Length: 526
Image (cartoon, rainbow, N blue to C red; front, side, top):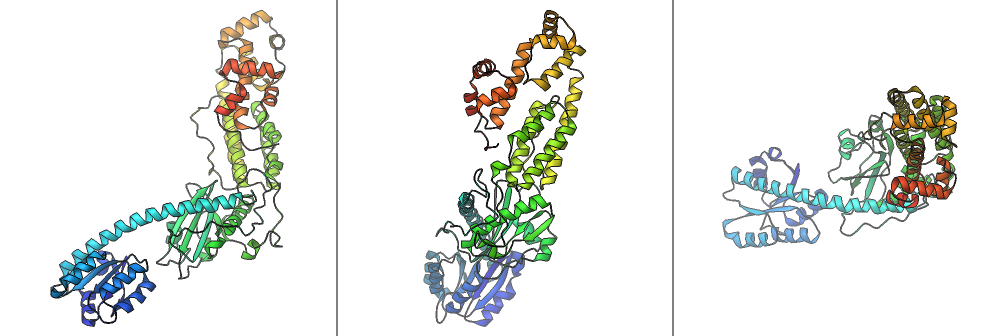
């Protein structure tokens, strides 16, 4: 509903205006009345009406002075002027000052007033749509600035190195609100995991979790797997209703009203709360901790900082899981992943890093598996909402890929011994492999095996081994920050020169150039 203020010194005219029109059917509600411009200006400051219908000639302050005063104070309400036959010069001046139109009081009819309101409503809708778009863009940029301040302070929030000290957020410098942005006195934050089921500001308001206030402005910002909702308001209180929050779907943390200068500190505190929610797996919404815990990094209410990310993320642990997957040891894979997940939990690793690790392992498993399509959807960042749920999901996808691999292998070639060699090479590609060793394994003469392998697979044994190793090296170059020389040794090349030469033979690039052309290496791990 658009709010309307009626300004007229004659009470019977105000009564007539109220009775002539079914205001709500046209999308308007009468928010107040005033007998002169001075009263109207005070009422406008309180109610912030969208439309002012005002007489031109009034005592104390006339309609033109009211219009000029409102514009001087930055009020953008639309104005429709009421005038008599002999006041057209005043009406003309009002239009020059930005009034939307005028009505003749003596001949005012329902149709004329309805037409005027319809026009004003269309102008208001267009203006609000334009202003909302501009304001959203301005505040989106503001959120990015604040988020950067949050992330760069202490590197604990989203930094990929250094101590994760988001449990003890200090008072952070927050970018000043631009003069171009509307000023609000308070803001309420809601932080949740991002995803298709994440709440929108409209969801929160419609479910009654916050008391609605006419001047409220909402916004949302998503980054690093989190979605934060903002509810800004000026003076009227907007209260969080804990009982209503308990009924909201999903899980997250919400704040009590805070001034804008506390936004960065509170937002960073929410990140620490979300980490706790990630590991304890508790459902529902909880209020943020006491504001006292945000005042100082030495606050006794703050738990000890988490360990640095590098102490929890471990290439050795990931490699153990990868090798179990390559060797199709389901129990070993489950044990390796469970052990890694316990390590991450014990160190209270930032859950965004955990989700990155899960996505990385899922990509590696997909690249190793047979019988799976390259178009298979990757593990989405928002696929699980807790540490335990993510482990279950990752392990389930890995086991499904192992099943697909076993099924695909059944029809690999029509020769059982060649299939046996292919399985062995896939599981032991990093070992010292040779034609002689494979011939002994299947009790065949070397030259015969060489010809048979080429006949059944279309390639030589040495080429097959080289391609296996290069494929594994390509994966490690993209998914880890291990040195190229170390990767060469991991996949089975005896020295750096042989690795570089072979890699270039199959890819046309050196390992270093391949890594550079295929994106930056991920964060440091053990």
